[in-house]
Length: 181
Image (tube, rainbow, N blue to C red; front, side, top):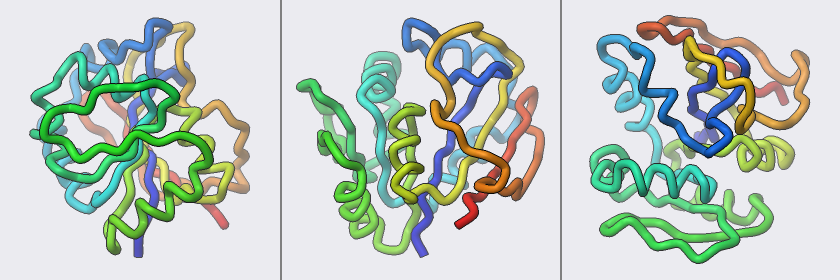
């Protein structure tokens, strides 16, 4: 059964990017041995993904060859209101509007595999608002930014989220929450 998952890292104070939309803070902390293996294991079940335009632009600018290494030809839907160039060799579609019809396309493309919501937080919030988010995989980094892009700019209470797992990866605390229906 397809699960829609938000897999991301955040600072202690709840930001996924700084005020300039940079993710550079993320690479300053020790992620521990096997961190690439952890992501690879997670991503092996991912058969479709969604990403906001700002996250896409950062990845494209800072690691354009990395797209093929990390994501291969996994179909990706990039939510944007701008014209953006595709990463060469990628399988991306640029979309906008309501997440529900796009999610339906993603479920079809995933064919039983999982869907990864790579960010940003507001985009993931739209999936959650529509009742389409199943799990949150959250790496908490030993850093604070003081301001920036919030992890999930919505209010969700303990009645909606259930802690499913806690672990450690280097200097990161890894939490997994399941959405209660």
